[in-house]
Structure formats: structure tokens, C-alpha cells
Image 1 (tube, rainbow, N blue to C red):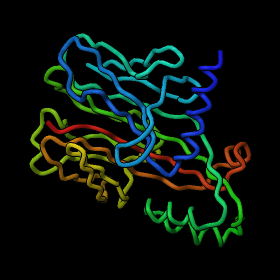
Image 2: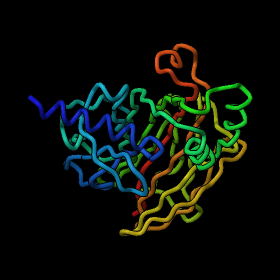
Image 3: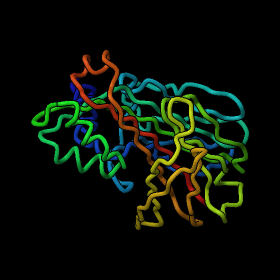
Length: 267
């Protein structure tokens, strides 16, 4: 009886402690043969290192796959690991979507908050925080995650699409079938509109080596990500905003962050 409780507690703890780190969908294989299971873990951490999470329905608002024009919820049992384990009929590109519920993190002073918002290209929040007379000794931030992943079944033909998430990274290219010599083209959305002149942080993993760099979206919310064959990529973009009164009151929070993430591999 204690095992599910302990597992749930550890997951909740890890989400809180690692709030300033990325949350991503981590497929066991980005390319699988037709008829083979598509499996993926959910991780929170940094530079592709992080604890694997289990299937916990109370921790997500949306968990689904899109394949061959059909969108279906990911069904599982409490505690399943990996949380995604699905067999698709046929071949094509699978888009996996996972949206978490809200969590909070507490800050003591502005130093760590300042490090976080500078890292995520949202330094404007520091002046806004002081100008609004918000507390500086202790305060909270509420956050949610909007993760996607692209997995090829067989040849992996197909296209990613928008799922109408509050913030979302959409692939304009298929990394398994398209020519990426000019880079991987992606779109960044916020509230259904292109997010212009925004930072996207890129994590590139080849073997055990991880390189981190940033790109920016243009006036249409589009960014070109330089990629290399044989690499795994994670893209991350964060929105900082003032939470609506109901959310702020429910979580005793003065800031809200929304994290968009996309993982894929380049054969």
C-alpha cells in the first residue's frame, strides 16, 4: 500500500525541486519498426539527465498521441513505467503530447528568481516585480509544462500539427523524412498566435556529449534550428506572465511560467 504513495510523493518532490529545469518526453527509441511498441518516459532535469516519471493521471491535464490523422488519449495504469507504451497499426509519424497540471515553487529573495528569468530571456520580470511592489523576501511562482515528441514508426512519413496548447512548439519539417541541410524549421505559439522574437533553447545530444545554444523566432514565430545527423534534440521555450487572479489566489503565486518543449532525433 505504501509503494504508490511513496512513488507519488517522490514525483511531486522532484517536480518542485527541479522547477527551473526542463520537462521532456524521452522515447526509448525515436525510430521503431512497424508493429513494434512506441515507448517513452517523462523526465524532469537538465541536459538530458533526469529522473523518469511514472504514469500518474492526477499529474497531467492532457496526454495523447496523433497518428495517421487520429488523436487518442494515452491509456495506462497508475505507476506504469514507461508511461507511454502503445502499438500503432501501419507506418507514419507519431506526435506525442503531454500537458502537466499546475505546480508551484517558492523563492526566498530575488537572486534565484533573477537567475531563472535571465536564463529564460525574461529579465523584464525583475523590474516589473519591483514596480508592482511584489514581495521580495518570499514569493511563489506557479508553472505548467507543454511537452511534445516526434517518433517515427517505419518510414515515419507525416507531419506534426498544432494541438491548441497554451504554448507549443510545432515542427514544420519532419526530421525523419525531410532534407534538414538548412536546419529544422519550427514554429512557436502562445495562446494560438505565433510568438515573435522569442528565445528557444536547444539541447543537442550526440553520444554522451550535450551542446546547448539558443535560436530566436522571426516575425512569423518561426525559427531555424541547425541540426546534425545522428543527434537527439530538445527544444525549450518559456513564457513568464502574471497569473490570472483565480490561479494566483489558488496557488498563492505572483508569477506564472509556461514551458513548451519538443524532442526529436535526426537519423
